[in-house]
Image (spheres, rainbow, N blue to C red):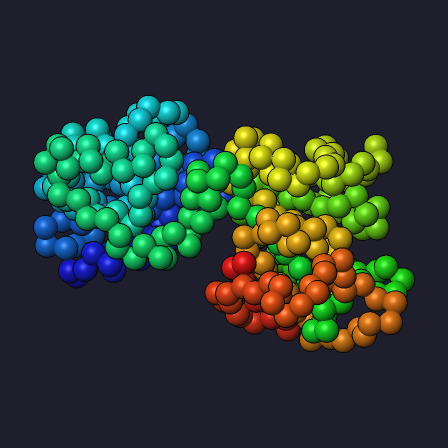
Length: 328
C-alpha cells in the first residue's frame, strides 16, 4: 500500500511511543523508511542510552532497501558524537534520498545543523510534517533542552467537588483501580517523582511505578525531611527555592517530573507558574468542605483577572473515573 508522508509520520509517532520508558534522557524518537513507491520498508525507535537511535535502527532493518528511499523521522537527526555516532552520517552513507522531519531538535548541538548537513550532502529534506503531534509527544524532552529544567506534570486525584483528603486525613483511595493503574503509567513515564514531607508522613508512599510484574524506581524527591525508615527512601530531601530544585533535577537529566504532593505542594507549584501539564483524576464522589482538604487549598486567587487558565487537551473515562489533561 502506498502512503502519504503525513500518514507515515503517524506511524513514526507510534513507533517512537515504544521508546518512551527506556529512551530517556534521550528523546523517544520513531523512524520509518519508505521506498519510492511509498511502501514501508522498515521502522525503528530509540533504544536505551548508548544504543541505537531510531534512524539507525530503521536503517539496519532496511539494509540495501534504504538506498534511494525516504526516511520519515519524528525529530531532527543528530549530527554530533555523543554516546553513539551522528545519525546524519549514517543516513547519507546508506543512500537515503529524502528525509521528512517532524520537528527540529532544540538541543544546542543540533538545532538545525542536522538538516543543513543533510541538505549539503544532497539529501532532500522536508520539515514540519505533523509537527504539533510530534511536539506534544516529545514535550518533556523539548522543554528540557530549551530551559534546562524538567517538564512538570502535576497529578491530582480528587472527588468531583475537588477534595483530596477527608476530615480524618485519609485519602486512599478516592479513585478506582483503573485510574490508579493509569497513574502508575504516568510515574513510569517520569524520571522523578516529587512529594511534600507531609504526604510522606501521612501516606508513607513508596513512589514506585508498578506496571504488571515490572517495578520501576524513578528518582524520589521530597520537599522537607523524612524519617530514616520511610518507604520513599532512598530519596533526595530538598527545601527552599522550587526553581533551584528544578534546575538541579534538570542537571540530573530529569526530563519529566511528576508532582504528586498534597494540597500545599500542588498549590506552591501552580502559584509560582512552574507547572506545564496537569493530570486531574475525578472520582464520581462528593466529600463537602467541612473539615476536608481541597486539592489546591493553599492557592490564592484574589480577582477574576488573576484566575489561572489552561487548555484542555484530553478528557477520557478510565473505569468509573474521569481523567482531564490540561496544559497550563
